Length: 244
Image (cartoon, rainbow, N blue to C red; front, top):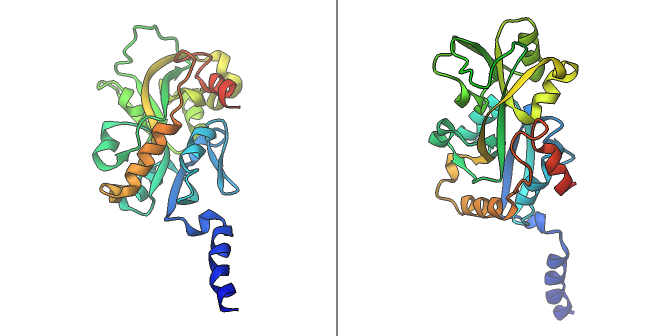
């Protein structure tokens, strides 16, 4: 009888799902600005951009808790260590100063959007701009910008353009159709630039093994787009041909 009890424990241990014994519980913030593209759903990431990000957290050593948060608040929680990871995020010098970039998983293309005609050569000097609060798009603002407004959601971006309170919006190309809706055909759209994108880690993981595990996972799950930048107002449609 004693021998039976000794042997039973290892058998039960192996039979328990791996996540119960995960080495790390990761608190992962997901930007609310990407609803429909990437969002938390039933404990998993869902949406057009979800597959490569889910790939990162497939490792059984991670037990992931997802939190949907406004971009600005998520960045604050990440810097203070209340979150371990926040995504999706484009790489910028400002973020690099305070946080740890996970390496390029994908690319984030940004566009200039306006209901006023502009040429390909326009530098938008003395223009008024709007962008989503905390977004990386501000790296594409000219130094001569007259005024810059930051808003909390996509609806406010369109509203400020329609009310002529601003001249130009700088937004992720993936969101152009979502933001403009039926007014898409009335708008002028021009690529602003492309940034490496994936996730950022909290600075508390600067010397931790977790950082190297995440960086390795990002490299393993990296997406290579077969489409040219800007194709069909962004490469989400091209990506869906590959992943979905």
